[in-house]
Image 1 (cartoon, rainbow, N blue to C red):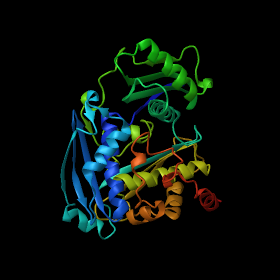
Image 2: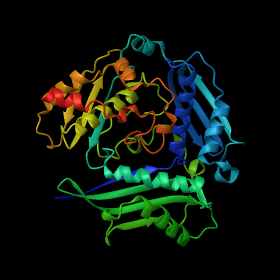
Image 3: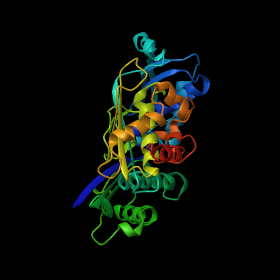
Image 4: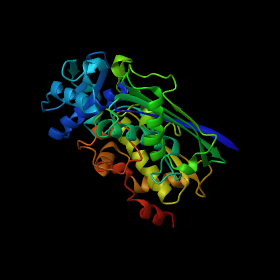
Length: 378
């Protein structure tokens, strides 16, 4: 049976992604000085303005104005014509402390809120991620590299990608469609953009074995993408949660990640679920696996753990759950300790996905439980 599945990614200059990066930059700056801070930073971006709000409890001071302007500059909004300029934009802050009613549950080691979190892994790529989202991110990262360090000076910060894969009986077959939309200077021709994106981005990123004569490629399909970023759309933290995770291939609990310190299980437990799923698939438990955990506010242990292996495992799911409970500590404090989450590691997670990246700081991507899992199952 053939099935088509699609995932998207967005550039760091996308208005929602810019907000994620700012929120996580605020978090990193605070954790660097006070690792036990409680942070829930929310950002909104619109024409000529950045608004920072949320609940923050810390004993340190950070210069939010300077930090925000540096982020905007790094992303590439350096001209008033872009609708946002790091030198002249307004930066408004409205921040309060964490509610004492929430703090009393977190202070004792409990979860900071109720909710369910998901993790997923599949063996269809080397990074144990779905091919659709892996390629969508790689396309956007390549466009960013060329814009920042290459010679295509007509590129601007905003952009999107989308990849559709045809699966045959659950296995990757071919790429059916690629969509790449890049913001550009108004004086460049659409013909030049299409040629550059095909030769400099798509051909260098996508393995040719997945492309055929029927693969559809759309570059800036409207023909014009001059107005973009916060000038075109208001940005908000947490509006790209499927881009951040598995591209729609797995379920999502609903809570976003960016701007939240690791005491928030929306973030830390989702990271732990990815860590568990990846190690289980790498250990040969299943070809693909999804795990769900759920918490009650103020309670340390999860109220439920469930596993879905999509008929790709010889082990029953009840046994896999027993292995998870034996190998992994799923209390908030246990997760923070295991994954070393009280560090300023979050800014670089905000763009191009939180999972599938074997870079410094992405501790939830480490395969260090594989042998222990195999030993228990034997």
